Length: 97
Image (cartoon, rainbow, N blue to C red; front, top):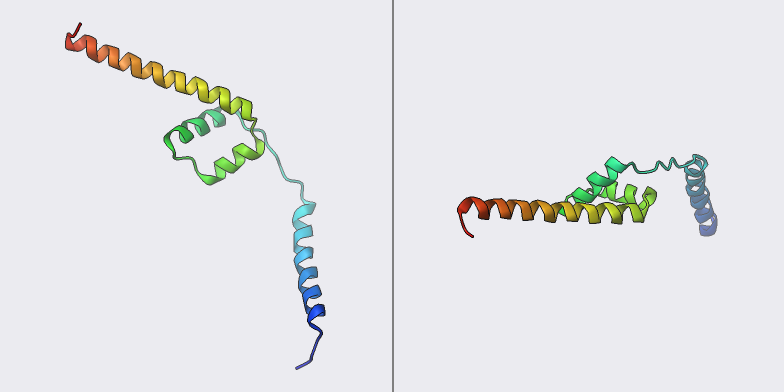
């Protein structure tokens, strides 16, 4: 068994680790903008609490926060309007004045 200097072993490990990192950094990351349909599905998923981590990270990496806020407000207004319509129809069909 050969004895080597511990600092040389760390340098060798770091150089191997750095070489693998450089190969990943050479490839440009494809940053695709998030489409309107994806934003709508993400907002609906978030409203029900079922959005997965992959989509969450995609939205924050590539999405515009203003768009998500506007779509979120619109979706909440649609949700409230739907509930008001359903309640009005149920009250009207029950004959309560």
